Length: 120
Image (cartoon, rainbow, N blue to C red; front, side, top):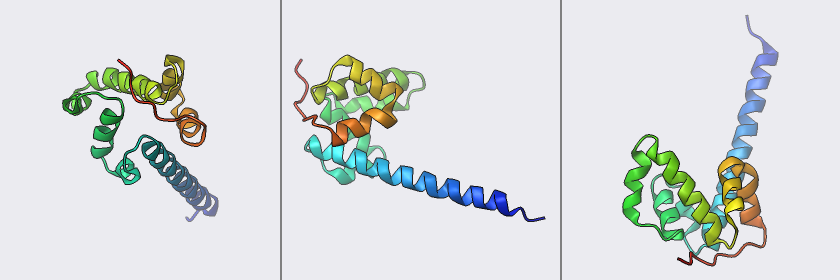
């Protein structure tokens, strides 16, 4: 038997997920452009990680570490904290990117943050 309310919820859920995905494509596109990288690179799998490594001034060979279980989590944390620093933010903002990325990445994209690079 066909359940109309379940079909409606499924359609609504799909539309909500689609809107969310489009919003985050825009957010990441804008962040990459702020860093001087091509915005379209944010939507290409693996290439977007390479661009993030370039933004945070880490060696490109670190891409291999993203494919090693457990190590990828640690490397991801390091890259996101460096990502915050590359935009002039502190480590606390980097932790925000890790734990609440759905809030902190739009702040980075649409806020006044400017790409300053990594100072080592």
